[in-house]
Length: 137
Image (cartoon, rainbow, N blue to C red; front, side, top):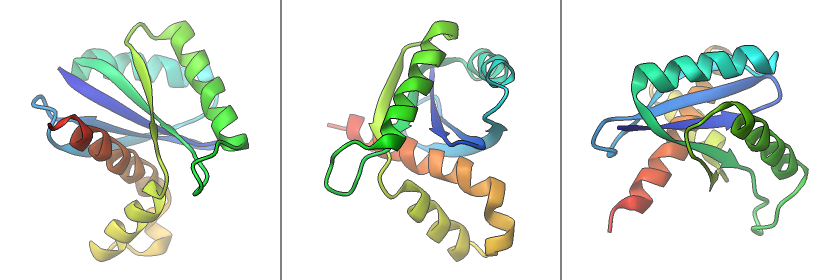
């Protein structure tokens, strides 16, 4: 079974998925954040199609480890998801995932203008890879 990662934003939600062995994360797609009902329906499809048994949602933290306004919005997002998704949901520290994703895309030859949608799913993949790496003893 796979793990799905979500990097929620106000406009788009980046999505990534693990392989079946839970070793490697790969960007999947990005979804419009609104309307929430459409987002939830697409996530249900992905959960079924990808055989997902856990969702990891990025939890924004300040560099000092504290939680700010973005974390409160992420908590609201998780609460809304828990109302419509039956799969367990965990949060994971997402500090610097977008920065890492942007660097990886640039090093792969993706120009800044082309990064708009790709960066969200790439950030979700960075987030998921960090979570997967934490599972290794």
